[in-house]
Image (cartoon, rainbow, N blue to C red):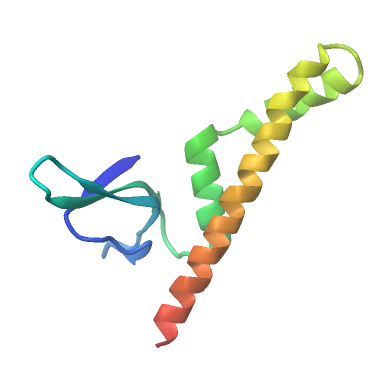
Length: 118
């Protein structure tokens, strides 16, 4: 979900009801009055938080439940000549996106842990 903030938001924050918010792709936006705000993609992480919980939530929110299995099936069908070769490309793109998402989350998680320690 897209969110907007007047001040620079933290990437990972407890919201007080046992849940956390994870924010990524935070960008500074300046309007016509030269007022600065921040926009980002925001995800609600239910309950206790771990890096794995963030990955699972973000991927499910971006792609939906069950999408990975369909992409795998299409890929396997394309490799075996049941579907055109191009049908497998979507799965390969998904894997590349997932790799980037996981690395971003790992970087943000490590930053969160370091801030929590200090």
